[in-house]
Image (cartoon, rainbow, N blue to C red; front, side):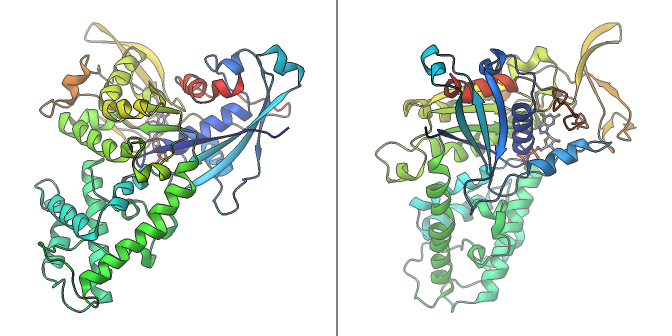
Length: 462
Ligand code: GDP
């Protein structure tokens, strides 16, 4: 019998936790994790899971072994983050929960995990936009007070160009470079700052330095139909080629083939910067999650994964806060993703929201501070991390009282809301050791990873 294949997309903005999530997911499946809320496993029905050769020759393989090796160093390190699309196949052999299917013998499922930068999803609306309309939006956004300091050099450069003058490769190169620098600087300063793209300017993948990225918006100020040989016409042609050769193939060949999707979100960072940063995260996610909102009648629908029947939003790195705050973290993510979720479930997809830590780097303890017993987390801060005036060397442990998450998620999102006053440091990951001679490997610590797996895969292993 044919082995069914489930294609699971894993996405999120840069540093949301995609690489760590996938590495932990695979390791827990193939080397026996402790997954009490992943019911096929808890019921002892998973016989074995193993990696299979990558089925799509044209797609790079997710570098599981290298990521695992980084986590296995004497002083373990976090693996290198996602920069491009990659994929890996895990085959799961299991006994069905149904007596009839059990009589047919052990069942098998191919799980294809597809890792890709969330930044690429913001390009979907470009398919529906002319170069003139996109330019007008992008220029207006660059002039916005929060972005203008980062966009100064680019705005000055394109302001000095005549869009109707003869096309000029050097001007296109310099304009594209300055525009990409601006997007990256705005993102670095504000972490999740929403942008009109192109997504590949932030996360070029294999297109770094490619001529397909040699264009940028121009202040056209209402000028239409520029002559064919003009700079504006050349930029518009390149914008169209970017759509045809980069955006459309990504949606057609990868995104639209996904059956399920998990969107990872780092909520804690923006939460700690205050309501404005959270509102910005919401706008950025709105742009990214627009792909799940295309109505059935839209011509874009054919490109946007009408198959996706389960969508999970997960707030990552929950091991930075005490378990008493995990439900609050979930509640904040629920509010942030409400709009995208409402529309996605209107298309028939089941939507879930969860807080998790794919690889838990801390444990919990209580510490007495000023005669008060406070819930703390204990871990090894990475070298250079600071708490107060103490700087850590990457070897010693510290107990941190991270603070409490706001109880009212709507209040946290209010633009005037003060920073949450949380104390975060980056911790060293736990060391991940290879399986011993008996094939058994120590289980990896996590928070609610098993629930996420159950939501995403459980029914396929019924
Ligand atoms: P990507 O850009 O989405 O692939 O993000 P990564 O998976 O590389 O994660 C970015 C960083 O977030 C990592 O280097 C870790 O510092 C942190 N991180 C990710 N997942 C976890 C987690 O489960 N626990 C903790 N403590 N940190 C995490």
